[in-house]
Image (tube, rainbow, N blue to C red; front, side, top):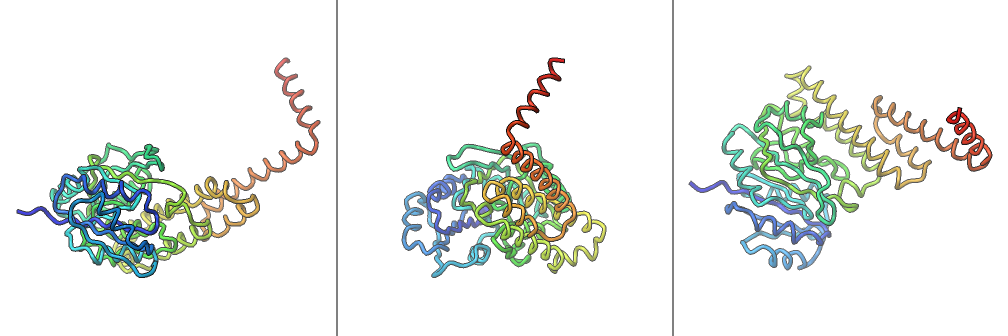
Length: 340
C-alpha cells in the first residue's frame, strides 16, 4: 500500500537568504511520497528555480504570481494547488527535522479521527541558534477543546502553528487560511476551526525550527497594524459560520474558550507594545498607539499601570537631572540610615 501523498508548500516573497536551508530540510526527509510546491509571490524572476534546483534533487512544482498579492491569499493558492492527502506549509526561512513528515503522517494514520498533528517547535535566531523550545512532555492525542485550552494557557509552550500537518480536505472544508490584516494569526484562525469537534495529534519526536528576525512577518508591522489584526481576529471569532454553529450548540464551552483566546490575543499585543514597540517609538507615540486596541478592560488596565509607572519614572528622572542636589541629598540620607 502506497504511503499517503504529502504536499509541502513553501511561499516565497523576496527573502531568499534562508531558502536553501528550507529546501535542503525537505530534501533530507526520510519520507519519499512528497509533493513540493515552491511559490514566488515577490516577482523574483528566475532566482527561485535556480536556488531550488541547486538544493533539491527530487521533482518539484514551481508557481509564480505575476504581481504580489496578500500573503494569506498566497498561502491559499498553495492549498488550492496541493494534490496531497496532507498539507504542510513551510516558511522560506524555516527548517524541519529529517523525520518530520514520516513521524507526523505516522501519528495521523494511527489516529484517523485527527485533523491536525502538531510537532515540537524550536525558535532560532538568524544564525540558527536555538532561543526557545516547546515541551517534550505532551500527550499524543487531545480533543480540539483540550488543545485550544492548553494552547491559550501556555501549558506546553507552543510557539507557532505555521508549520503543522493538516488534512488537505479539512483545510478546504474550513475555507482555507483566514484573511487577517498583516497576516498575523491567519494560521491560528484556521487551526481553531479545524480543532473544534475534532481531535488533535501531538508529537515531540519531529521538530519545526522557526527563525525569528526583524523581517519576520509578525515583527515588521506597526503596532496599529497589529491591533487592526486583533480587531479582525475578534470579529472572526464572533462571525465565522463554523464558530457560530459551535457556539450555538456549546454555549458555556465556547464562552470559556473564546475568553481564553481573547486573553491570549491581548496579552500578545500588550507584550509586544511593552517591549518591541517601546524601543521603536518615542514615549508619546508609544503611549498613543496603545489606544488602538479594541476595548478589552484587562488590556487597558495593564496599559494604564504601565503608563503610570513610566510617567512616575520619567518625572523623577527629569527632576533629578534638573536638580542634581536632590539625588546627592537622597544618597546621603540612605547612607546615614545604613550607618545608623
